[in-house]
Length: 281
Ligand SMILES: [Zn+2]
Ligand SMILES: [Zn+2]
Image 1 (tube, protein in one colour):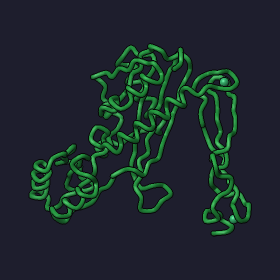
Image 2 (cartoon, rainbow, N blue to C red):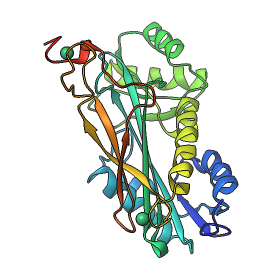
Image 3 (cartoon, rainbow, N blue to C red):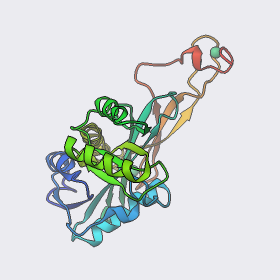
C-alpha cells in the first residue's frame, strides 16, 4: 500500500460490472476507495458488437473513459478498461483477447497503462445453416455460462439479440431471425459481465496494474515506474544473428524521465532458430 493512494477516491469508469472484479483488488492493494457512477455510459465511446465503432487510438479511448469517470464523480483517481477480440496476431487460427487498463492520477501526474494478450477466450462467430449448427456452437463456447448474440448476418445490426443466456430465448430469437431473413449469424457476447473467461483475464490484469502502480522509480521514487517499450534482437541460438524477438524491456519514469533497460525474458538468452530469418528464411 502507498500513502499516496490511501483513502483516495478512485472511480472505475465501466458499465459492465467490471468493478466487481477490480474494486476488491484495488482496495486491498492500493488502499483506495472505489466508486462507480451510475450515470456513466462508456458505450458512447464504442461497443464490442460493432453497432458503434470505436474512434481514436487505444490510449485516446482509455483517456476519454477516465475523463467520463472523473466528470461523473468527485474522485481523484480514475481507472478505465478496454478490450478487443480477434485473430491472434502471431498464432494462426487462434483467437485472442487483448485487454488494457489505465490508471490516471492527475494530481501527481501519474498515468499507468498495462496490457495483456490472452488466448484463454471463447471468442467466436459463424453463419448458421441450421439450429443444430447453433447447438454445436453453444457446446464449443460454453453456453449458457457464457452468453451469445444472434443477428441476421455479419453486416446486419438490426434484429440483433444480445446477452442471450438461456435455451428458451436462444430458440425463440433464432426462430424470429430465421423466419424473417432465412439466415442467422451467431457470435459470443464478450461484455465482461456475460463472459467469465474475460472476467478472469481482467482480474489478472488488475493485479498487474497494481504492481505497475506500486513500482517506484529507482531515481526519484515516483510511483508507476513502468515498461514503456521493447528493444528487439534476441540472438538466434544457432547463428547468433539478432532475431525480431524482444531482447530488452525499456522501463521509464514519468516524473523524472529516468530510463533503464532490463532483460525482457527471465530465463531466456537466445531464440529458437525457428524464428531466425537466417536459419529459417
Ligand atoms: Zn523518476
Ligand atoms: Zn539463426
